[in-house]
Length: 112
Image (cartoon, rainbow, N blue to C red; front, side, top):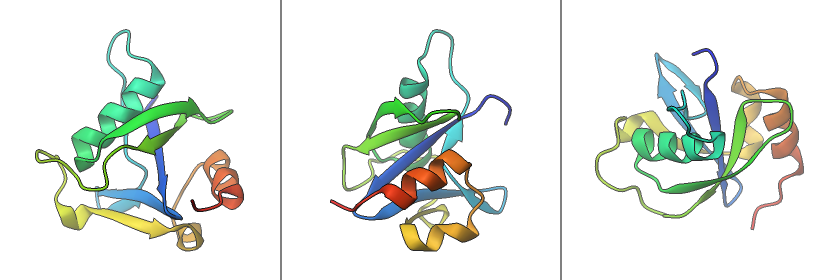
């Protein structure tokens, strides 16, 4: 998806991934008119997964936005089935196609 905003949601040393078109990747979607990239990322996470997140900062040089998880359990109404949503430990992400800026962020991220 061209000009898609990608949401980077890290919680407890794990990265939120979604499966679309048979491939695992970051939750992503296009912005709406007058919507900031941070707001787009938060909306996309909620629409796809049901998790509430707050888009806090765009990662330099990419369309990826770092998001803070606001709910430990997803709300109802997620577009994707539970089987298409997973939390992947950061050390298992090298097999996933991710933007270089996201990889650099994950390498420096310390679980809280």
